[in-house]
Image 1: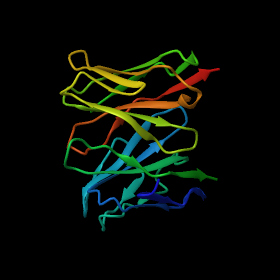
Image 2: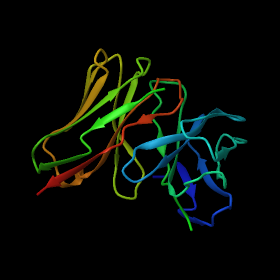
Image 3: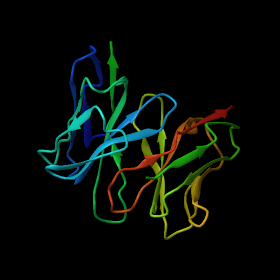
Image 4: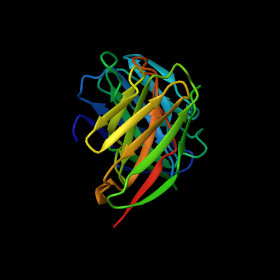
Length: 114
Length: 113
């Protein structure tokens, strides 16, 4: 299951603190994505990036920020403005060209706010 | 934006029987429809996908059908096995748009021995 990695696997945060989740891929994919998953819910799109130094808000971007300084990396910062940050966070990547945009997922980071 | 509805939320079938999961979508511009399988605590993994220029696609025991006019697509699993137990998600997006997937809320498939 190599190719796209996330760290840490588990993360605990106190209220009022910002935390940054790491996502790295060596698949040479152009596009990268962040999703949030809550129990009993599907995945919801937070941010996505199709190219270095550019990114777009997804459906639930409030309280989150991202950067895309390198093609391989797409870190997500969960800020104190995010009211309910406890969730499972999944990063994904895909190509932009070709027959479709199959997204490959990382193993996820489980964030818990104490 | 796109909205994807998925039914049922839980599906229990006897081992060896077939399972069918259905999804509807709202955006007529969507033309890529993947299905993901997620085991407890693991990452989602693509099991099959379909593009709007085809109506059906099959891969061994798994098949997906698409009706673009009615905006619905379905996953069919035949001869179910215990290892098929998992949560299945449907999703929709615009091919080559790379603007992210919109997911259904998932179906918990339980295979009874």
